[in-house]
Every structure is written in structure tokens, then in C-alpha cells.
Amino acid sequence: MKERGNFGSKVGIVLATAGSAVGLGNVWRFPYMAGENGGAAFIFIYIGCILILGLPGMVGEFIVGRHAQANAARAYDKLSGGRPWKLVGHLGILTSTIILGFYAVVAGWCLQYLFASMAGQVTGDAEYVKNYFVSFSSDALKPVLWGVGFILLTHLIVIRGVRSGIEKASKLLMPILFILLVVIVIASCMLPGAIEGVRFLLNPDFSKVTSVVLLEALGQAFFSLSLGTACLCTYASYFSKDTNLLNSAGQIVVLDTVIAILAGLMIFPAAMAVGVSPDSGPSLIFITLPNVFQQAFGSMPIVGYVIGVMFYALLVFAALTSTISMHEIGTAFFTEEFKISRPKAACIMTVVASVLCVFCALSVGAYKELQVMGQPLMGFCDQLTANVMLPLGGLLTCLFVGWYVPKQVVRSEFTNNETVSSRYFGVFLFAVRYVCPICILLVFLHQLGVI
Image (cartoon, rainbow, N blue to C red; front, top):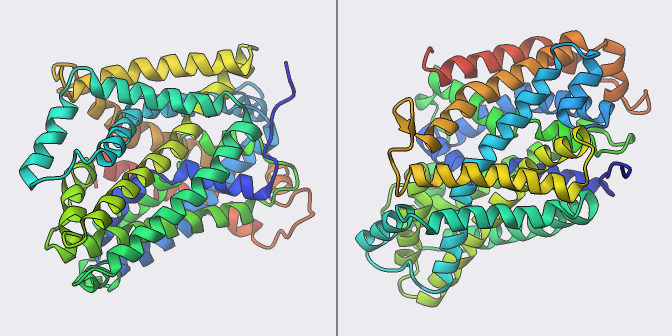
């Protein structure tokens, strides 16, 4: 067995880990939630939730991964001495594998739309664009091919290793993603009437803030940073011992939040300029926005064409940075637990994810009878991971780090063996012991509809 890989630079650490957090949810979920729940008021609350839940939760998972220097399953096993806590790592790996399977379906849609927008196939009236999506998504073959193709694209990056594959790709994809986003934001904000969209997003309306909004902000903070997926633990196992965990986590959450806000500034001004109210979910990016860009830049069709292509390129890059991290979780597990080469381990992960992707794509397309508990397989996988597996994994991790792992071990990792400041260690420990578990429990109950 070769020596484990590791990230070669601090920039690589931040960009790769931020890439795992930045995904399609930043583009369609955060802007919609902010717009519907008080604009800047929601953003302020979200930032607060990041500070009390996201940041300490992320550092907690970093501590487990870096201390163990192993895949998630072995990391929890090593720190727990073989006790049942090791199942938390297995839960994270299973969760990320299921997510990769159905996430690849939507990522495949994005890839198909990128090529379709380049070919000028998603232009026309609203009904045509809607029918285009319905026709494509219900096809028995196309969504499957694009989804599996996206997993294979991810495979080609992961198979190259941590530095030559994941880190190198992140250093390329994340700057391009950010540049594309900024360019589209500028173009969107220059449209006539776009200022109304900016006001809609950034004006605080505290009258819309309710207990439900607070819970939604908590949930967004939790899911946006990939807590509970074993991703942060796996990536942290490639951190060097001199990586400042708190500083790195801070830089990652800032980058993730800035991109989410910029996504809102990309969508709302363009939508408001043509009098369209953005919807949430896939309908926003596959039905609403193609028409928005087309109408908004109607007097300059070439600009509308370029912006449309850039938008779907942006989505592809955002999805790819996320699928890379999810694929790596399983690849690291198979490599270390079965003592096989990275190429073989990556192939196993690719096959497993591809099989799940095929059935998920068919369940919302050509074979809607593929259902579990009365809903399509893809929807069931989404609900199972979001409502149960992710919150459970995040909760158990906080309890594990806060109460089971020896305090001295936690402190040693937090302070890099007392070589960096321990000023915030007490705050972190209090948060991971008390605040984070309560917050995650509230998210869990809210997701289940109990509160």
C-alpha cells in the first residue's frame, strides 16, 4: 500500500473543502429561501447559524479526520477503540454514497443543458422550454447517460489522487466558478429594473422572521456545509499537522456564504427585470431561468446566449466540486478497508453510484413506478438522507467529539499541539457539546415535521 495522499497547500485545502460545500443548493435553494424569508434578515440569521452550528460542527469533523489520518469508518474506529461509535463513520459513507447517486442525476441534467444551451436548443417561449425539460427528463435513456457520464467525469478526477486529482481540479474549478458567477452577477445587475431584485434580496424584512424561518436557516447552515456526510472528516485526513483547523473552517464558511449570496444577486435581478418570480428547486434552473436570460437580454441575443452558456457551465462546475468530494469518501474507504489500489477502489465507488443513479433517474422519468413508500426512488433517497441520515450523523459526531473523545486529544488537534492560540477552545467545546446537538436536534425534528 502506498502512503496516504495529502493536500499540498493551504489554498488547496480551502478550495477543495469549500468546493465540497458549494453545490447546486447554493444556486437554487439559498437565494429562494433568502428572498422568501426576509431577504437580508434571513442572511443575518443564516450567518448567525453558521457561527453557532456550521463552524464548530465543521471543526469537530476536522478533528476526527486529521487525528486519525484515515477514512471516515476507520477514523471513528480508531478514536473509539473499536466501540459502536465506529458506526458513525459507516453511516457517513453510506449517506454520501446515496447522495452521490441521486445528485448525479441533477448534475447530469446540468451537463446536458450546458451542451443544449451551447447548441441553442433551450431558447423559445416558456411553454417550449418547459416541454423541453419534461421531454428530456422523462426519456428512458438520455438522463441515465448524462448522470452516469457525470459520475465517470468525477471518476477521472478522483482516480488521479489527492494532489494530482482533487486538489488540482479544485484549484482550477473554484476560481472559474467564482469568475463566472461574478460576471453573470454584473450582467444581471445592469439590466433595467434589476435594482428591484437587489432590493428584494438585500433589504431586511424582519416582519417575515418566524420560528420556522429560524429553523430553516439552521437547516440551510447544516446542509450547506456538508455536515454529517463524512466529507469533512475524509478531507481533513489529508490535512497536514500544521493546518490551523479553525482558520481553515472560517475561510471555507466565508467562501461558501459569499457564493450563496452572489447566487442570489445573479438570479433575482434578472428575474425581477422580466417580472418573473423565481421558484425553488429544479424548476428554477431548468424551466424558469432559460426564459429569464432570453427575455432579459432580448435586445442583445448574443449576450443572452453567452450568459446562458456561462450559467450552465457554472452549475456543472458547482456540481462537480461536490461530486468529487462524495466520490472520494467511498474511494478512501474501499482503498483502506479492502487494501486495494485507488483505481480499483474508485471503480467500485463509480459502479455503486452509477447503479443507484440509473434507478433514481428512471424513477423520475420513464419508470415512475420505481417507488419506495409511495414516492419515486430519487425523492425517497433525498428525503431519507436529508431528514434522517444527515442530521443523525451530525448529531452523533458532535456528541462523539464533545463527550467521548478525550478532551486533551480534542484540545491538541484544535491548537496543533499548543502551537496556535487556544483562545476559542472553550467556546468551541461548549458549542460542540451543547449548542450544536440542540441545533441539530431542532433541524431533525423540523425536517420530520414535528416542529
